[in-house]
Length: 447
Image 1 (tube, rainbow, N blue to C red):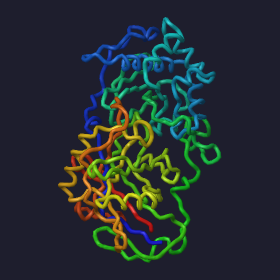
Image 2: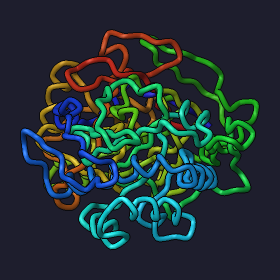
Image 3: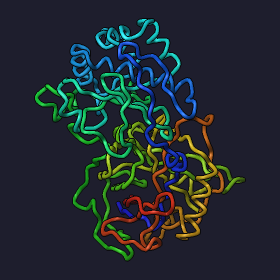
Image 4: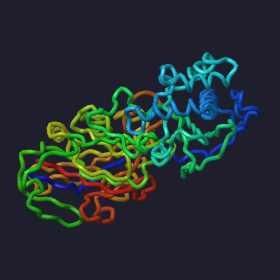
């Protein structure tokens, strides 16, 4: 089975315009008494009712951390949460018997008790509570001096409190030394926990700290058995393009990602690990050749198990399917100019992009002008089958209504020769918003 490294550019599309609009950390007025913490914060610009409600909840949780039983119960329950960063869905947790210690403490701090707590939560989208910084999560043993930070939308200010209920200013770009809990809208699939049989909790101070849950083995799509000829017979090409002959019956035909390096995943420290997805977008109607529809998605929670991979930091290597052979063949029978391959940081429903189509189209046109290509296509029968394509999307589909939180564009991968960059063993560089280098990647077609 042959494999051909692409000469074409991967397109990675962006909604960085909104992420770039993020406010600096705001300051609110601390209450006169830490026992009554439901007063609304003062602000130069009136926040939305939802943001006010989230601020109330964050302050309640922060002051509740002055209570030893509440802290110890929370640490214990986070440690047993079956998710990589040990996240808890806040409302469900407070409604459970495990969350009783935290709820009792929060209720005692308001005049309305539990009714007031859940009434405030009812005005906010679903929230998750966790300790996003690995160093904090792996060293905090439930002691006092904990901060709580919250943010509703990524372009809005962050608000943080200490155990006295007083607001503290935190740097959006640098995590504090103090252990910090984060309350943000849900990004986690709480219906898809990590399986206990293939996961282990690491760096948890022998059970005294929360730790980090890690898989004991790579996902099946990341490791595919290879025989002696799996890598082909060599046969490199110029400009960072590598290809070769040889054959193997162990790797199903299709287009694969084998390496990804992202410099800026656009996920601040208080939002935890990024969730990287790779989307293929291209035309799907012959009468609309410049209209791009989402054709495929690979990520942590794809619709096709063969496309599952989990990139939680700047580096990933393995082998994950991007476009299956049947999808490839169905596409090239209808369209000849290729398709875009986009890298995103998911902040919403997995494998469902929420984007502003106009900035994305503008970026694609601009990148195409600068680098000459922003697409990949296949040439059946050619020595180098995966080559640069001419497709340039002028319009993108935007599934669903406009949301207040949006997926973050990470960049467009461009053929190294076209971009003027050469990284050994890589096929593309990733160009981000403003046409700035944001990483590199390998894309390979097995056939």
